[in-house]
Picture 1: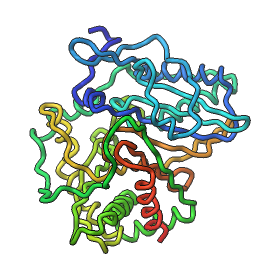
Picture 2: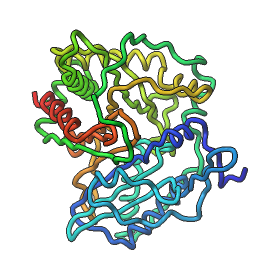
Picture 3: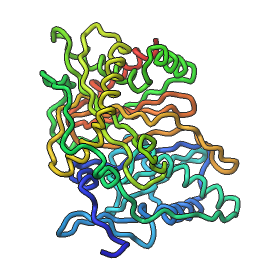
Picture 4: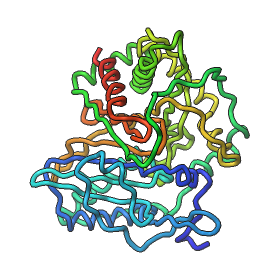
Length: 393
């Protein structure tokens, strides 16, 4: 097979078959872009990261990446983030960039197929695009060192390094609690509800999590779990809640994976904890932290990925996904538009809502994305309100 084509691996193909939408990073700006220079910067990004200018095609033996001569053109962006997350990448391309701007503001949305990306990678690529654009705005030419077209994914990097077979997980006697949801009759599109805390409140949340000896991610998992449990008031005693927590393995491996390696470096880790009606979110967060630590010590995400590639199995029942991108530093752009915020999302049809979290400019921001065929706005809105009340301690 020529070097301009490659078959998708089993794990990459799984994203396609499951129906995952692309990973999206939408960056807001004060100021506007020169469309011509932005197009040039976008094309140069495709030179530095050639996988971005591949098209995914379906052949007789499965899906393949096929390298294209250039990127697709920058498209007109959606006015709202909710409309953005419901869009698919055009023409089967791996990536797409869209721009929506007014007289004095702009929003750039970079979307990359989830089979080869995660939110942290797309954020890195977004920052690389801004660096290229700023260089062009100054009339300068900056040398670049393109990455290889195709790089080894986690499946290849893990091969032979972990005990074969699925890891033994703690037994869950009862089915995990889930939101009541709707009729599950697509197509209904996706909804998103946004929550943003100011810098002072964000600092308080961070300090409270630290004092509780847990991460902000675990605290958020505790808040979400308590919010779901509160919606089942008739149940007596604790109920199991299963959290899906994507874990970025780039820095956990030896040697670590480059931050801009063209692959999906985040794997889901499932943690099930009991939640009683009167549990405080921090109490639940402590259980989540312990479960997550134990799962990582068992190399559960890595072993599950390898086992799933050899023998695919349907996923277990999950309550909620909580994905924390971490601290996002606004890039210093001496010229051109000024970054004012970033938002993150990916979509998957089904009953599991997903919370995407980032600390952007010192402010904790949450986006809860959900399939409207399974959940209505009021239901998710009440969950978000409950999470907010738990964080404003």
